Image 1 (cartoon, rainbow, N blue to C red):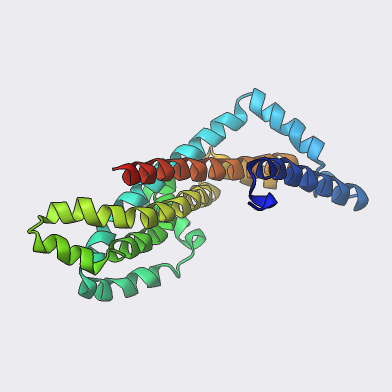
Image 2 (tube, helix red, strand yellow):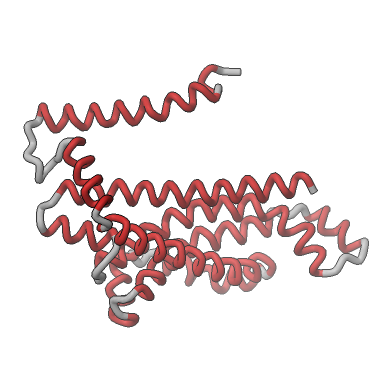
Length: 256
């Protein structure tokens, strides 16, 4: 076993990389003599993090963004599954629909978000839709690839035993597609955070995107850094949660 693959080394590398990044950040700010409104010191950001965390401001904004991102991801996952499965089963349908789906991805979300706010208002609906839209396409692609990854010989074998459509779906297609499906979910859940924040940039009165926009206008760079760090932590938490679910489901499938 290589040294870099051992568990103690992997646990030690995380704090080491974090410490090195903080030291580099401090040195750049100190040697460059940047003012706080351009590049605040790590200690300033930590102090602002504790302040906003203790008075409830950070929790309030982070909870709203988390709800919007998670809700949008679930919507995108539902629609990607409902659309992707028939596209995977009917190649002629995919050839008709896929050009429009691909073309829709050329529209930047920052250009679409103002329309969502105009149509659905400044409430959470426009943010949910922004998060759903940005996570939909990668989820859709993985659904199609996952369903089509089924071994044709295994499909023919089940058909030769007069297996029902439900048996083919549940006992063959789902196990074959699940690893690819969950890999797409890991990507989609992180993208959903971006979608929610973009929606908050355009029009909102709460959320981490709103906090970033407000801090930028006030040249409060320390608060901006805090919001960015919390966003990264939120995306990492979502990614880790999906990875844990993936491991549990795949381990359970292997044991069956």
